[in-house]
Length: 492
Image (cartoon, rainbow, N blue to C red; front, top):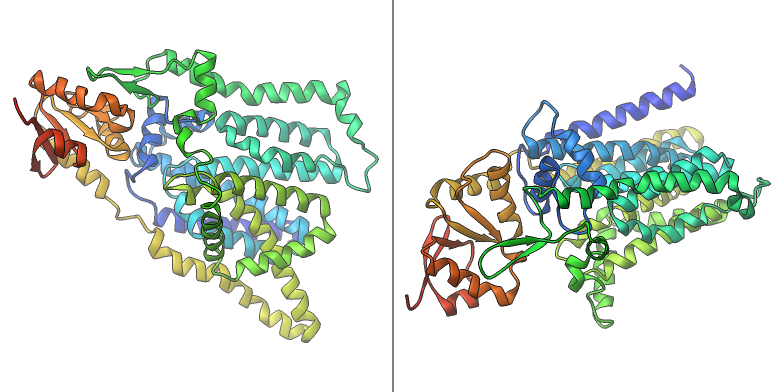
């Protein structure tokens, strides 16, 4: 068996090992948070929260036809598939930059078993797919940087446009990706050649093709899809979805207007704490050792592969800076590109360590010590397994089914985001309890909240809410049930 076939076989074994553990820890059905919304959106070809993730929804819809599990489980499989598809280019990049297969395999397995890569690969979420696109963009641009094959540049352009159509957050990668366009010292290519018709016409076509999925948003908005998470309720409990066929609405949606208050949501005095939190998260993701090992690897790569390393560093800094300043309770899940790139630096750090050991010991002892490096990914596997294991997770399904069973006919049920989407999952996909009207409180503007509830109660509609806050306590009488709180007027 030649070396190429040998390395291919090893990579397949590694992928199978990762896939086995992902499948073992995957929840059997609904998870929580945005995962439920994404599953319903993909199943119905609906509109989910800003910025839309149009490419993901189209691909996710195809996954809903898989003959295994329920809809939620099939969308979990998409996340796992995306990460498994990301590992080969990660391994290839590690090898290209270190020229050592052993550190490349170790680093790839390390990334797969980091907490966030693993936990996001077993639930329906958008991040693993978006990272998969980035992995192949970087791979194609690295190939362009070293070989200047036009096809790789066209492919990178198409994939970048596709990633922007999925989420405009990809634009923050652009400064780093452009650095890859500088040809290597061995090439006779120049920047000027990219501005000739030979390149501009195919690049324009690739860009247009990659952006085409954006048409999904105005199309589905105009189609009155049964699941639309971009709009507001008025004081008569009527939902008004935003018309994304209007350019100003579409632009607002794509730029994250739905979460304006979270964009750059920290003051300058709060940013040091956010930076510390991010650094600690990176430290913990690789068990502490990965941070200094990555820095050591970066020092090697910046000397040996200056342009690719500057590109990777710029992508990391741009992505990290945006999300460090983003005020969201789940923003710790949004740093996958940072972990991906840092893994490449770790591969170089492992190479440095191996070289150091080789210089200090005899060759047989070095060969004997090589298995020790596998302790990093295997330790991550052992530590993180219990934290990510969701194969028996049924809390969301149990609670939601209980609510659907016990709510009186024709009830209005007010719930926070993921609890509302769980109810809608069973209503829309399994056609359970269509008589219940679920109202996601996120889409009720504060001025409309009291008038809306008063309108329902004065028209003798049963009104229930999932939790009590100060406004409810002040304005309504309430009675606790197992499935929520029944509201009534204080002075009927």
